[in-house]
Image (tube, rainbow over all chains, first blue to last red; front, side, top):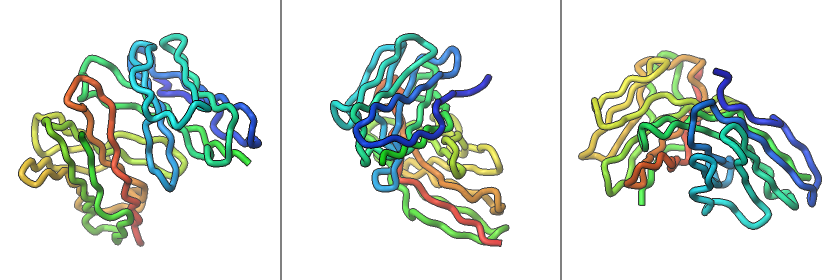
Length: 116
Length: 115
């Protein structure tokens, strides 16, 4: 299996621009998670989906952030408009449902975002 | 609410020395606990997990952790550090008392291994 795939790996953009991050979960996984990692705040869960339905988006910072999962093999995290404080590494992770809370989350390599 | 606390944001050991990374949890229900490792510029990778079977859990790369309910701890150990163990280590708890595997992460411990 190729693992969780994220694109792009690096993104540099200017303040005010729209940014779209993409994720392909492991085939057969029903859960998909989006995290943000910064030096100041550590690892934060932004949103997660189960069977393509958003379950908990309480970690989404503000209305500038949105996430979608149109099908079981693709999800996007969009920031519009982007701000310098959005600079971070964004991770996508996926897991199965069968074991419930015992299941392992598998992380992608991350997208390193820099907003100038 | 569940939480984990990792004592020591930076730990430095000599190559060949014991590695001990501390994690304490808070949970109102029996927890499931995880240790993940993050190498520079990479995603997180599972080292090991406790899912209420054996209290001593063995993971990859020679790491192990012991679940101690009386101490609410799940410390990570390795008898002999290797240079390749230099990375950041995260403890996490899951469950929220339900079936979801939403993870709550600690703040991480950066392990340095000196030659």
